[in-house]
Image (cartoon, rainbow, N blue to C red; front, side, top):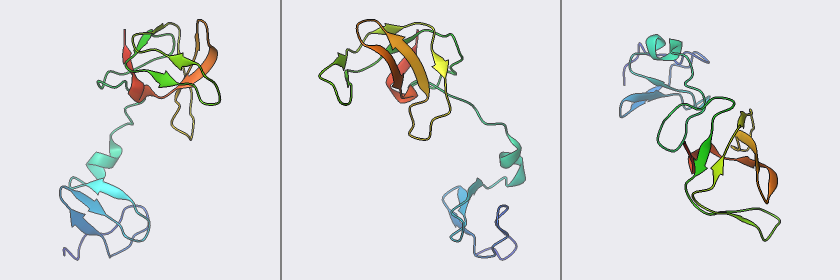
Length: 115
């Protein structure tokens, strides 16, 4: 263990290396071997299933059948959704949109691709 490495979040001296990442067992913070340089990089934002960045107003296509919770409706794979809004949701549903025949719905970005 490298005794010089401390957690940048809580300052713990118990950080350990796991592959190419450093992990703090006290606060669960993970950072790259580059340390502060990796932390300074801006967050990438919301990305689709293929890694393409999404923005408000984009059109996306659903990549698989999705059951609508609490309903018997299904959003079929291949459904095109226009005019999405990106929202900050704690449950992972980071796209708000309206789908014809279903109405207002929130989707996870991992189940769509940019159209």
